[in-house]
Structure formats: structure tokens, C-alpha cells
Length: 49
Length: 587
Image (cartoon, rainbow over all chains, first blue to last red; front, top):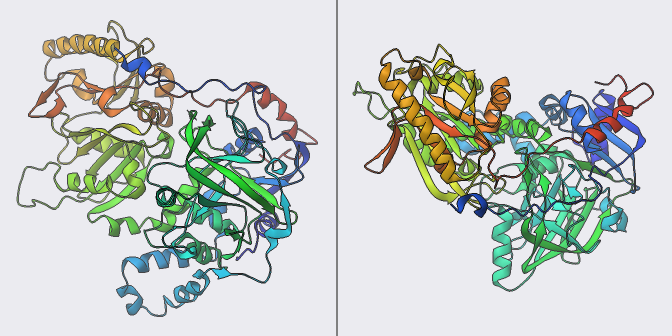
């Protein structure tokens, strides 16, 4: 199949039982309330011996 | 959204079209490439042709010998040429803002929303135009950190990537690098962006052949636009303009942490009518990118033998995060007249592997040769058994220290820095790994809960890692205790049936499945720092050991935290799978 768009591909998948539509509203955010931990760790912590 | 995707993918479920995304008017789609079968279905008409073309490149003689077979390949080549200024340019339908896009945050500690299936397009400033351009998949951070909303985005790209060369060239002239990020469009475009193509072959021509449709493009304000894409973000990267990017839960199964990466000053964002935002979720393998990898392997598997003479097959082990562990089978033809068989040609091949494209990112490279051609790298346990029976730990371990490693791998001394090791095995079996008991390990001071992982491999727990000095003392104590036992009970010693000892935080977890063993051992070890040996020695610059090899696979303080699902979110998404929900009865 030569698809001219992403949607054409998805419709083809749906026609072949390979796609499900999620009709409910979904939340794109999967988080912990906006808290971002300081993840700038230092390698020194375990090399400084 | 990410949690729904993960659950559906894990169950081998269908592609998903999210029709209502909170905060955005655009729909989103995921799990499109979720299984190899589905990926092959999408490209069912062109896969054979692509395989043929890749083979043709290796051996042009084939084209002359079988003209009929290659006729269709020739036809397909017509689709290869990108088409400039097509009549219709759907993606220019409307101009939008970055914040109009679905802002998908995938893991609890991620620094913001990311584009996970972008096709990042850049041109060579010295050779402008699409034929010398680079298309790659480097994650884009859309929000969070210090990025100014709607004006800036983070551009995460790693060592050995084509875009780096383009930025370097532009910066040398003091000019910003023009970047176009395409999202969506025909699925062949996404695959082209992750395809490891040989130097000089354009991703856009490959996309045309794979998709059976010419790659269509135009220029707007000097930026290249993929007119079939669903979205295009254009912008510029200025010399030395770097900003903290991350954290991001990545495909090793850990967070890649916050580091400075180039920032893209956004120029414009375009969307086609009713555009769909494709995304994927990466995490501890296997994930959707696993089947991406399998699809690429299906297309290029045979080409590797042409690229590296003597190499029969390679397998970058997905369960171990891909780059950390590479299993290879080569040929041994150097000294057929000699009765003593030991690694020779496979060592040359190992060097070639570590000097070849993406394979050069391998950290643990196992290589062997099998005269009977019965061995495969796909059955990992059988492969390991074959190697463990034959490897001479005094002779066959070769370290590469103080070198570069994959950016996403935090096991090294600092970002991009670490070590590699080649473990080579060839010849008759020298070790009987059949019996796997934990007897001699039961009463070791400082260690507990020994568990057999597979024949020849044992996992044992120790208290949490504190620093390298303490680790050396702890493993020194293990060495003394095991060496004493070894001296007391020669020949039929249980210790001789063990090749690898894995020191870990949770031996029950490591021994539970082969995948757990592979993930823990190879993502948490830096060869030069975390490999030890019972009865180890250095002789004429060569390191070896008379007893088992020891891997300290405990989590170290400098490692990134593993990505973990949020129990609250998992509970929240149950409603989609219950009666009345869109996914009821689907899994």
C-alpha cells in the first residue's frame, strides 16, 4: 500500500482490525503533580574515594 | 495516554487512535508499529523490494544475472527521487503554536512533554539541498525546564549522529543551523528516520521506496517542509546555545537525566487539516521501538555480512537496552592447520564491529564461532551456554578502557565516557556448566541469597553499593573466601561449573527471568570498573582470572533511576478497559 498520509494508514489498519479508537477524553499528562526532581547527579559521589 | 499505550502494547494489542486529547484539538495515535506483524503489514507491498534493493547494493552483479527479478526493484527506484514543490501541500493548511500540540508527558519524572516520533531534518551548509540532507529521530522536548513556551524546544542528539556534523559545519561559519521537525505523514517517513543507512544514501529516497510514494517537499522561509507530514516545526539552533534538557524515561529502562543540549528557537509550526499526532512510549524493553528494530533487522539483516567480512550475524539484545549487549557469531578461518583452537579471526571481526556505525555503541560484545553453523544469536540462553562452556577467562577477555559509550548509558565515569569489553570464545568446551547448584555460595560472609540464573551463571545479593573502594574490599573478601574453598576442593569443585557471578541488589529478581538477568547485568555494569574475577591477575598488560568472572551489577549512586509505573495512574486508566470503555474486551 502506498499511503499518502498517516490517516490513510490508520484507516487501513482499522479496516483490518488492527486499530481501536478511544472515544473518551484522555489526559496527556502522566505526572507527579509538576514536581521535577533534581536529576543532575554527580558521578563524583562514588568515584571520590 | 502513555499508561494506556503501555498496557495495550504489553498485551500485543492494536494501534490506538485517541480521538479526544485534553488541551488539544488534535487527535493522537500510538502503537502503530506495536508488533512486527503489523509493521510488516503496513509495508507489505514494498518490503521485498526494499530487501532486494539493499541486497543489490551489496552485489551489483546480481542485477545483471537476474534482470527479471530486479525489474520491480528498478521500478521502485522511480519512487526514490524526492519531488519538489508538489501541487498540493497539505501540511501548510494552518499555522499553529507549539502549545496547541498534544502535550504528552510519558513518565512521572519526565521534565515535560516530548515528541517521541519526530523526523528531524537538517541540511549540510556546504552542500545544500535534500540529497545531502540528514533525517534522524532525536527526541524533542516541547515544554518544561527553562524553555520559553511556544518559542523554544530542546533538541537531544547523541554521539555519532548525522545532525552533529551539520551543526558543527554551520557553527564553524558562525551561522545558526536550520532545523525542520516533521511529525506524522506516511509511516515510511518515520521508519526512514531511524534507518541506519550507509553514508551517501538519503533517508528521503529510502522513504520514497519504502512508502511507494515520492517524498514531497517544498521550502518556506528557507526551511524544508515535508508537505505530506501532519505537523512541521521549523526553527534554528544557534552556536553554543545549550540548555538543560530532560529528564526523560528512555529505552534502557532508566531516566536519562538533565544535561545541556542544543535549544531550537522555534520559527513556525504548521499542521495539516485534521492532523494526527503520532507518538510512542519508550521504557524498559520490550517496547514499541523493539518492533521498529526488528523491522530494520528484517530489511538489513543480510547486509551486515557484506559490511563486515567474516561476520555471520549480530544481535543487539533488546532486553538489555540494545547497545549495552551485542552478541555476535563470526568465522574462524585463520589457522585451519593448527590443532589448537582459540579466538583469532573473531578478534579481528570484533574490532571491525566496534568500528562500524551504530554497532560501535556496543558495550559488552560477546563473539564466538561455530563450525557446525548450528548456533544462533536469537536463542540467547543457548548462545550464552555455548560461550560459557568455551570461554577461557584467563585469556579471552579484552578491555577497551577510557573510551566513549552511548549517551543514554549511565554506567560509565561521566556522560559519554566509559569502557567496553570483548568476550571471545572458540574451541572445544572447557567447562561443564550442566550442574547448577548454589552450594559453595551459601555461606559467604557479606553475601546472601545465591540463586542460579542459568547453567554457569549465579546471582548473589550484597548490601547496597556505596563507593568503588568499598566494592573492591567486598569483592576482595569474596575472592579470599572462594579461593580458599577452591584450594580445598580441587577438580570436581562446584566453583568450576560457574563462569559468571552476578552481584546484585535482588537475586530473586535477577534469577526470575532471563530478561531480568540481561537487563540488570548489562545496563548496570561498566566493564572496566564493575568486572572483577576470582583469582584475578594482570600479566603482560592482560587481565584475566582463574576462577569465575564477577559482575557487580548493583545500582550505583551515579546511575539514573529506573522508570516505574505510577500505581495511581494505573488505577485511573482501568475504566478504559472496563465494560462501556473503548478498550473493553480488546486485550
